Image (cartoon, rainbow, N blue to C red; front, side, top):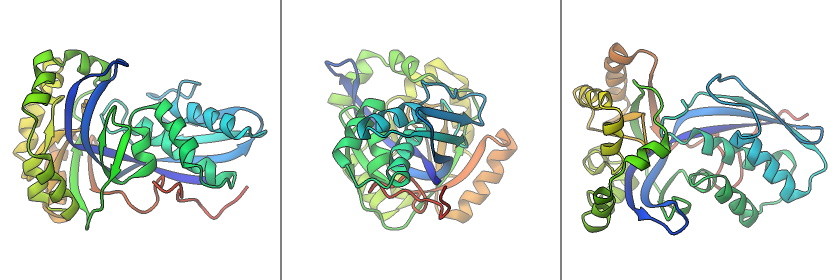
Length: 306
């Protein structure tokens, strides 16, 4: 048996650079894992893939990214055995936190350990790119600058950790709907007048400088998300008054996050946020570190075998 903790991610910077010939949007994004994590347990089984999931909002059928990743990995390895997987969800779906992509990366890394296969970066990369744009990030990095569809990953070194409070007051926002709401002039602005200096933000992230990170937060998808869900703007304004250094939205939403100047401030902001949004609030730190689907294909595994 192998257990893997699959972390959420935050987009500290997200610029949309237009539509690619393959239909995807070209993006430039700086992402970081945080320690809000799903738990995935993998066991050898009979032929095929069986998946159990404890979240009613997440299907456990063949379309689930864990099942798709497991089938792809078994096909690559021509493994005669199958896989039994149990997924315990903690990352809310439809939040812009990359939970499904992280689960897929955790599956690939976990199966490498479960079946004691040697590292195969190229093979895993091919599978990861086919599963989703964010999957290569979770497979390779804790903090990274990502280009292309988001699948061209440049890992970044970081000193220390950053502290955040997350809040998801509203329901999920479909990624496709948010991108569809992105206006041509907004995408063009990403080419002609990009957001705050990415180089300054990058340096602040690498130093774990919360004030510097807060001043450089940028998400080109925020405006279209607010048009789809105007009440989210009220939540963002309320969040900004809770005492964070800066607030933004992750991915295509609808999860909001605040950057805090240390864990003490994060605890205070968390308490204030819970007064508004109850248990839809999480205090986290990043990069996730520790037990997580490793970017070096060395997932945290339990010592239990079987």
